[in-house]
Length: 223
Image (tube, rainbow, N blue to C red; front, top):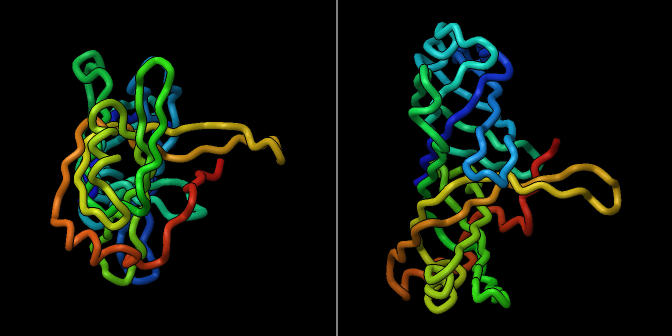
């Protein structure tokens, strides 16, 4: 399962084209509004197919239009993240929808959680999550998870590589400057608000190491 809802501002109007196999696709570039005050806005490519592509192109979406976007987040190594659109609607008053940013994922842990404790008493567990795509021939999407507080302790005690879990949280783009090249880099990170343990211990052990394509250590986003 891969379900994302975001509030975005149009920064490049929709562009409709027909692919080589006669399918219609419409792309749109949006700026994602920050979910928390300390976050910065970031850009995301949106892609719609078929009837939804025609609907998106015909919606007369000008620069600055605010949209609620619903779909699945595709993260492919070496490429910027892309939202595979399932639905959208125009926001007339942004005050009615502050901080729309919600993601729900179901997948398997790519590694054992890495847990850090801070002098303040806070605790965070970091791990990756592999989420299958609809086609069995495609590699999964890999997400970087940050789990804070008591759920982090639960993750430390019960999650292992291959464990099946479900999460809800918010999405942000973490940025940094490459010390070697001086270029700005980034990666998509999911801040987990709720963690659900799924499946059995036997199921988790059987799945260990079973992800097609392997796990990237970090999924950097090109700028």
